[in-house]
Length: 123
Image (cartoon, rainbow, N blue to C red; front, side, top):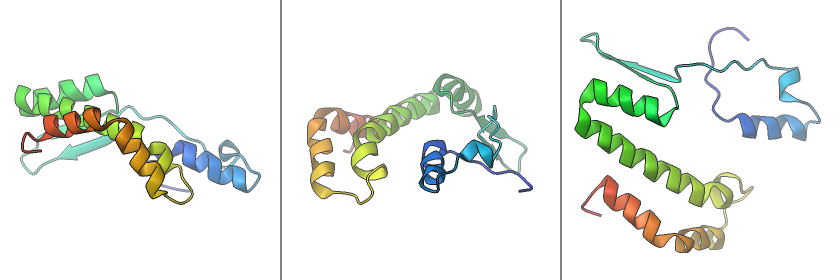
């Protein structure tokens, strides 16, 4: 394959190859990249994100100011909380199960509600 490809689903890809009794690393060479996302604007400004929450916080704060840095930290915490709650019942489930999703939500209602409220005080 030629060109660049961003692959953030390593675990899913590994499982997909295993279904065919193959190993992903026998077919692809995956190289970790320092920059996962580069955003740029017509005025020449640029924002690089790495996947490291502390480095990304510093980059966003330098790019857009302390207020946006704090907003990113709240968003990152919310995303982590949602991923933790819904990874198994939604993302890893062969068929999402409403009862499992409800259990995941009810197991952490205060944490999820607090995370949503931190993201947007109107919640």
